[in-house]
Image (cartoon, rainbow, N blue to C red; front, top):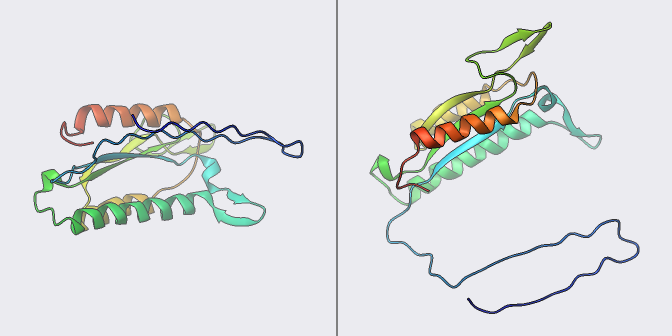
Length: 171
């Protein structure tokens, strides 16, 4: 399938670790006449540690950075849908939002005196157009961090969302 290049990288004595990068490529054409819709599930950490800053040199709360990043991504997907002039909603990319922290529940709950945010689907697949982006960003901006880190629940909910609601013609 094309050219093969072998490169050996050695760790110097002064280095603490070695980072390796592997890349594969093929010459298959990746062009399409019709835009391929995407169904995207974003799994968001709202555990208590998301209230913490990144570090001693950066006081930005992790949850704030998460919200900013997810909102920017929503804008990019909306712009993609708009720039390709897709008029059929069934061909537009969609986003689903899942949060994880505590147990799978519909609302926050108390446990041993602590408020715990639940692991749940915030938005099932939503077409990312002007109206859908407002809905999705409203959910993102309303995120509150508190509780455990049950990423397994988040991934389970995302898998269920994909298996139950994703389109067969979407990627």
